[in-house]
Image (cartoon, rainbow, N blue to C red):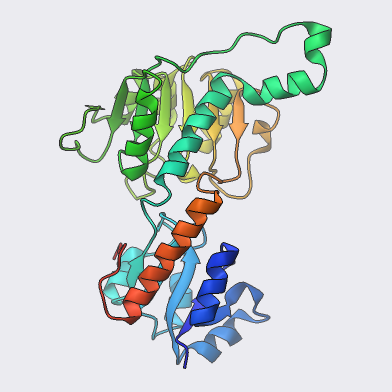
Amino acid sequence: MAKTVLLIGPLFQATMEKLESAYDVHRLWEAKNETDLLNEIAPQCTAVVTDGGKGVSNEILKQLPNVKMITVFGVGVDAIDLSYCENQSISVGNTPDVLSDDVADLAVALALGVCRQLVFGDQYARKGRWAKEGPMPLTTRLMGKRAGIFGMGSIGECLAKRLTGFDMPVSYCNRSKKANSPYHFVASLEELASNVDFLFITAAATAGTIGAVNEPVLKALGKYGFLINVSRGTLVDETTLVQYLTQGKIAGAGLDVFEKEPSIPEALFGLDNVVLQPHNASGTYETRNAMGNLMLDNLAAHYAEKNLPAKVV
């Protein structure tokens, strides 16, 4: 008999097909009554499959006392109570590293997009403004500017390699200094922001990083500085960010993530100094397929009583 798992929400189609061919999968988002479904599968359900945005609540886990494993399609585990899982002997796996290159690529694209005004320029050309008004206003170059990276994990390191190709000196702020890192370590995020032209956010969402990009940090970044966020919207004081962008207190922002996704502050829609993406940094066929395979490998390893390839707890 197939092992029973609960799927919190839809995933990459190829991954869902592989999952449902190997396991007895119950789709929570399609249940007419969530409580009834959980009660029905509680005796035999031993694992939960989810993504980094949705996670799984303690309330659901309490209704599934036999669950001993959560496998996450994504890197972020901030939507899961890891302390609760550890106390309940529930292992948690995620999909790190396989998405780092694509996320780093989009971070660079957002930086170029906002400083070179690619979206504005596209509309300037499409709407015939070039012919009517002449050349569009000058923009800011990326080459040679100072880069700061908040969070020098796998994504941060991939990003740093790309930025050095633009002759950008790279500094970073992290929980601790990375051994043998060729990049300049700065202990204070505010100090980092005050000494760079582009501040990239790639840190994981934790109790110590949520809200870390606050008004003092944005003030330190200043009116010529750009903010690029491909991590989590919760790391940034979004209200203050919108204010600083609207009032020209920072030069611009490239944002793939937001505080209350999928909602985006409407004030951002009319700003030419902002480039927006719908949390799509890992959104390539290649990476989503690799994420799915690693997620399934975590699940298979759990049932085989082997070490998870990518274990968080």
